[in-house]
Every structure is written in C-alpha cells, then in structure tokens.
Length: 585
Image (tube, rainbow, N blue to C red):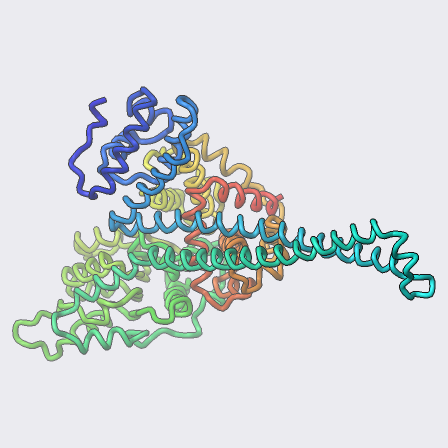
C-alpha cells in the first residue's frame, strides 16, 4: 500500500492526525485506493490525498468509510466515531480555509439541529405526560368529592368511613400525581430552555455560515481597494460613499415596463441574471440589437434593478467616451509622469459597469481601454456593453479588443441560437462537473425550453443529480432527469409554489409567510423562494413580498444556498424534485 504513505503535510498536525486515523480504518478493508475509489465512484487521486494528509476530506467521505468498514469488519465503536468527529473538526478548524470553515460550521449546525429536534420531541412528550397527569388529578378529585359528599352535599362520617380504603387510596394517588406534576413542570422548563438555546445556536451558526460564504465577496472588495493609487485617501472615501458613479441612468427604463416577446424573452431573462451578479462566469456581456430593439432600455434596466437589490452597490453607466472622460477626469490636467490609464477610484470600486454605444471604442485608445476593462473584470466587476453589431463584425477593432469581447457572451434581441445555448450550458457546468459530454450539453439546451430560467433550472437539476449519485453527465442522465419536466400542463404561479411547499412540509401558508425563524420554517421558506425563482417569472422584490419579507437579499441568498445544498444533500434534492413534480402534474 505504497499510496498510503504519509506525505509532507502543509496543513498542520491536525490534518496529519486525522489522516493517520483514516489510514488505520482504511487498511482494515484490505483493498487498494483505486479499487475503493471505483467502488465509491470517487476520484482516486482525491482519496489518496485524504489518506496521505495533504487534503482535509469532507465528513461525507469519513462517514462512507466508517459504513464500509462496519459492513466488513463489524460496527465501528461509538468512541471511535466520536474520535474521528473530533479529529475532523480540528483539521477543518486548523486549515484556515473559508471553504473548510463553512464545512465545520455546517457540521456544528447539524449537531445543534439534532439537539434542537431531540429537545422538541422530549418537550412534546413531557407536555403530553403533564396534561395526562393533570386530567387524572381532576378525575381523582371528582371521585373524592363523590365519596365524601352526602346526598345533601354535606360530608357524611358514615359515607366517609364506609369508603375509607378507597378514599385513602385515591388521596394517596392524588398526592403522588401532584408531586409528579411538579417534577414534570421542572423537567419541562429545563427541556424548553435547552430547546430554545439549541434553536438560538442554530440561528447563530446559520448567520456565521452566511458570513463565511460571503467572505469571498469581502476579499474581492478589499482586493479592489488595494488597486487604488497609494495614499489616495480622498479617492477611497469618495468611492465608498458614492452609489451611482456616473449620472445618466434613466429611472423610467425598468424591467417592469420592458416589452417582452418571443424575440427577446431569453435575453430579458439573462439581463435579470446579470443585474443580480449571477452571471460573472460569462463576463463581459454584450447586448446586441439594431436601433429601437430595446438594448439601451435593458442596459438601464440592469442598472436600476441592480441598485434596488444592492442599494450600496457602485455602478458606472455611460458611453465609451464617458468612460474615457471618467478616467482622464481624475488627472485633469494630467500631471507630469501620470498616465490617464491610471484607473480612477470610482471605476476600481464599481460592481457594475454599463457601457452604451460600444462602437465608440473604435475612436478611442483601444489598447488602454482593453487593458482597463480586463483589470476591472479580473477584479470581479460585471461589465455589460450595448452594440448594434457583434464584436467580431466590428471593422477596425484591434485583435486584443476583439479577443477580450469574445471571452464573454453575446446576447441578441432574437431567439438564441443553438450554439449560444450550448455555450451557456458549457460555462455553467464548468467547475461543477468534469465529465459532461458534448451530446449531453446539446441535449440540455434542446430540452430545457426557450427561457433563461428554464435553461438554468435544467442545468441545476442535472448538476445536482450528477453530484449526488456520482454519475457522469451523459445523454442518458440528462434524459432521465429532465424528461419528467418537459410537459408543463399549466402555468405555475408563485401562489401555487407557496401552497405546494406549505402542503409538502405540513405547515400553513401563514406560517410560511410569518417571521418565525425556527429552522424548519426557514428551510421551507428558502425552498419556496428558490422554486419561485426557478418556476415563475416574478422579480426578486415580488417574491420577497409574496413571502412576507422586505429583505431582497434574503431571496437571492435563498436561491444561491438552495442551489448549492441540493447538489450535496440527497434529501433536499428529492424534496425539491417531489414538490416540483406535484406542481407540474
């Protein structure tokens, strides 16, 4: 078993101790790494790194290994499982990786959730026992009154002594029951305190997970700040306090008053995604269309909608000439030795750059602008252009500028072509699955429908099924996953989705819309938000309002979190599939 020899470990002693324990467990299987990886549909290299201590495994891998050893060698002792849990938690905590931090918090959240559920079950059992004891006391009290009462409702010595054994027995039972009720009340109070504490711990951990997941965004902002000219404190302050960095967004141009038809439905849906910053893998975006087809309207709508979702976001809107003036404006008149190419604070801090009349690039310094746009894109700024002609048809465009534009995605005001759909599928699968066939990608594009929400929903389901069941993305898998969703017999509304989710989780619509933060209701509410996003055309503010929330970011977070978790958790994947099948039936 040469592959199980420990390698030099840069992760620390905690990861090494976990790997040593896993190797001892693995060696009891009596097989090699490649054979085990094939048995579990895992990557052999990843398994080897887990066992050599050069990568911290997920708990799913550890749990699978425990089950496999139990099947062959007998059950692993609870103490051994607890030890592995402790070693795994210590390795995650010591790695310092944001991803491992999220994994650790999710494990702690699972433990807290189990404690909350156990306490809730015990609380209900104690409440039932308390109620039953109180009812029994009432029955005994009634019997005692009947025994001691004469026909004229006054106590009779004769009647009392005639039933002395029964009387004293009932009185003894009543006293015992009262003691029992007092004990039950004390235990019930303690259990209730433990349940509330566990629920609060769940909420705290959920907030910590949200913070850890958003850490990359914070790092991105910090990285942008580092790009500002040294010592330019006033520029930093101006950028931080500025919301709209260049005047010009027309508030009348919104998604709500955009005329949607078969020619532009797909591009309209894609523009919504761009405004939500959900399409950064396709950066830059070029909106293509002739005069009067609505590309400028969509450009303004993206900026206006983005500002609604992210009030503190930084937006630049203007033409290519405005962009040049923005850059030169910071150094006007240009000091000796200062090139106008030095990026202004406004642009460095921008989350969204919207450029109309992109063809103006031909009359401006192309190389400098292309370098600037690359710098912005690499800093995670979403860039959107509007142009009457495709970049590849722009005569006079430099090779470097054309190459930069073609690294993104062009969306026309006509139904998308097959190649365009396949390119979107390819980019969404990239980084999620490593073995998608060309036939499978073409099939997803063909089956999924004519809108961006249908396409992205289909891609999400395929990725989730592939990752959960460790299957390659081929034509067979795509047909099995997507065929049940092809025939929508009726239009789905947000109200249908909300009622469907409420029925599935056996709760009321009012509970789903309430502000209750219990874990069960939060999970159901996030699934409802995700399905409203996938199955309806409603905007984020509309979905938030329908679910009794004013927090638009909560809808976007629920969509992102549910898409991520359904790829990892089989139970959630099946829950969402069941609800969707019922809605489509």
